[in-house]
Length: 340
Image 1 (cartoon, rainbow, N blue to C red):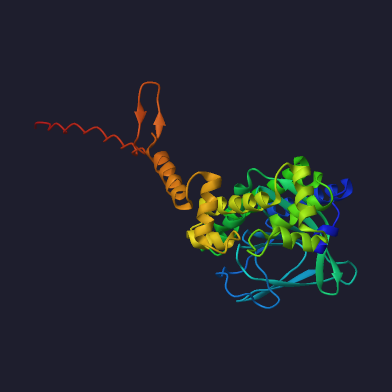
Image 2 (image 1 turned 180 degrees about the vertical axis):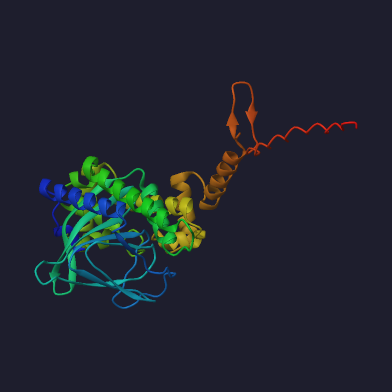
C-alpha cells in the first residue's frame, strides 16, 4: 500500500486533465469509437501467482501506451481509446508499456464503500504501473455506478438485436457520472491528514482481508497500535476497531442488496473468517441478522409489485393495460335486388 500512501491528491491541473479525458471518452462513445473489453467472469478461487481480484468492478480507460492484461481464461491488450471493465472477483495481472514517443498513462476507477477512487497511473518501474495522483470522492449513489459497470460487463457478452445501442448508452451514462463527480464531488477522505487518512485508505482498500486489524495497520504505517488507535479516535471521534467493522458491514449490506451470494460467501468477502460471528456483528449494527435483512428486502420488493399500476383521481388501477381492440367495421347493407 506504499504507492497509495505516497500518491498525491489531484491538483487543479490534474482535475482539469481528468475532466478533459472523460469528455473525450464520452465523445468517442457517442461516435461508437470507444472500444469496450471485458474478461469472461470466473468465480474467485485459490490465489493465482501474479494475479489479484477485487470485490467490486474496476474500470480502466487507456490514454497512452498499452496494458497487457492476464486472466485465468484469456489475455488481451488495452490500447489508447479502449475502455476495460473487470467484473468483481475476476483475478487479473497486468503489465504496462510506453509508446515510442509517449509514456504509459491511464485513468483507473475503483469502488469502495460509499466512495469512488479515480487515479492516473504511470509506469513506475519497467512494466509495472503505480499511482501518480489519486482522489477519493464521496458517492452515496455508489450502487448506481456499480449497476452501470455490471450492466456493461453483462451486455458485452449478449447476443441481442439492440446490444450495441444498449452498450453505447451504458458507456455514456457511466462516463458521464464519473465526469460529474470530478466536476462537483468532494471527498472527506482527502480532508483527513497523516496516518488517519492512511488508515482509512487501507481499511477501505483491504476490508475484505480477514487478517486486517489495528495491529496490522499500525505495522504498515510504522507506529504502535495504541498510538494509532488514540490518534484515530481523537481526529474522528470513532474507534478504529469500530471503523473497520462499520466499513465491513457497509460492504456486506451492499452485497446483500445487489448480489445473489449466500450469507457465508458475503461474510468471507467482507473480511469475516467466521460466518456466525459475522451474523452477530451484523445484528449489532443493523438490528437484525443478515438473513432477516434479506427477507426484509424481498418483502419490500413484493410490496412494490403490489402497488397500483396507475393512480387516477377517483380510482386505483392494478392492471397492466390491455391493448384496445379495433372496432369492427360497420356491416354493409345487403344489395337490393332490382326487379326486371
